[in-house]
Image 1: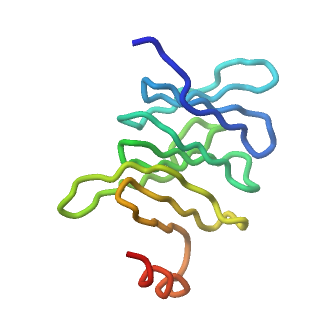
Image 2 (image 1 turned 90 degrees about the horizontal axis):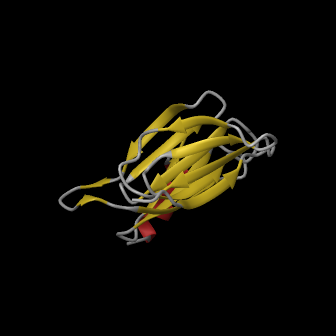
Length: 135
């Protein structure tokens, strides 16, 4: 299989470019020199979501058809958080899109089953009304 880039994203301060490759790797590049800095390993299927943190230039989110959502420190080349979209009785749901909130404290994703997933710090009370209105 010939490697092909499926997604690309610049980090918040434009120092790094992250590419998702169809061999399930993410590659972190120095945007000024073009030097490959890190291979990020973790996904088991193609990645079609790369989302930059709104103000922390070290943080990048990736998600894909394997149901995995990773939060990466791209300066160190390490995973900081991992979530798996397991749907009871149905297996995993491919993650189609993710976006950070403007304050960077939350992110929301949609999956192949039409679910809205909201992640973040603190209490989920503000979202109880929202989640009960979606089916």
